Length: 462
Image (tube, rainbow, N blue to C red):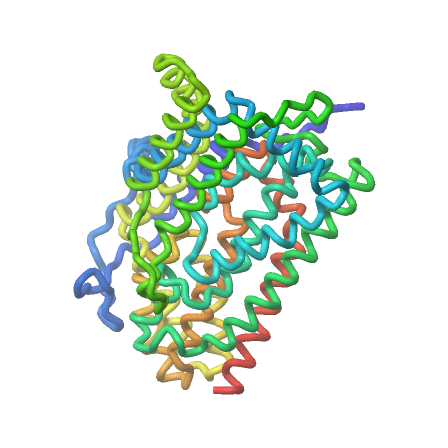
């Protein structure tokens, strides 16, 4: 069989080509800026700015600038790698996975809806997205051992949490920030978003379960091949699940539970629970501490713990680099003074439109904006203060502007190569980007069309 002439480039090459494209655009797109008050752009204040086209040197430095900008996320990824390296060496994960598969006794498919619902709840309530990076090395081997492929493991996390983020209900990092800038409460429009979440999460679960069933029945149906993944899973050689390994798995589970609890803003969700307010520095320290504790429980020597932890960090170094490089695209746009110009074009396109046309156009405009600015909180801060006043003139409430923003942002971040989580997850599963697009495009289309229906319903009910 002949090898195909065209091979999809790696994630690094794709991102570097995007950086070049953005640099070229800084020579073609006029530089401009809004006036800002407390870091927020003021509608109607756009004006021309001194051009700052990005050259070859800027292109070469963009990835490094992005790495500096995203260093907290990158260090977190390395600490997760170190922690997993120590845990994997103990054999506890292999033994635990084998035990889970035996206990399920052929009913492994029910892991898919259960886990996707959990990730979906995290996505819709507190915007669980970057934090999911810690779960891919944990769950990919589970699904590989169950006879699925790496795409199923990635989908359970990425599409489960992603469907929740698209239809964020009380997510303070996207919906909360956007609602504040739109001048509405977090509760306005929540009923529509809850219905949206139920529909989207159900569609995602059905989509993944249908694909998983096809792969299980006929491995040739896999878009990447069964067994493709960063971590292999061999069920023929079972590892004994000793008492010590049970303790290690308990510590392992506790670390992830503490991580989830630590980042949830219970106060902003109206829940009377203590708020830790943790973010990546605290989470990095958590995984470092967890790795040391696991090593001590397994009676490793001090030098053995250190060497194993560093080797684990090295395993995820490529993922950390991808995250940094993807952030470099936004840095280059800002340095080239074209971010506000692109936003201004959207402002012009939305002027003098009716309510249905406005909300659909806003949704469509937010999609390319998300490719250029993948951060949901960053995009909300930059755009909603511009879009919300325009919506009021068109007879569209701020809550629908928020829904259009978060739906577009969440949808695009499931597939765009500028989304660090997508590229990082695919790198961990050794899934080529073109295979992911081939697999997920139908679900993306369903979500796209369904969102437009929800937005029209919102206008008609408003």
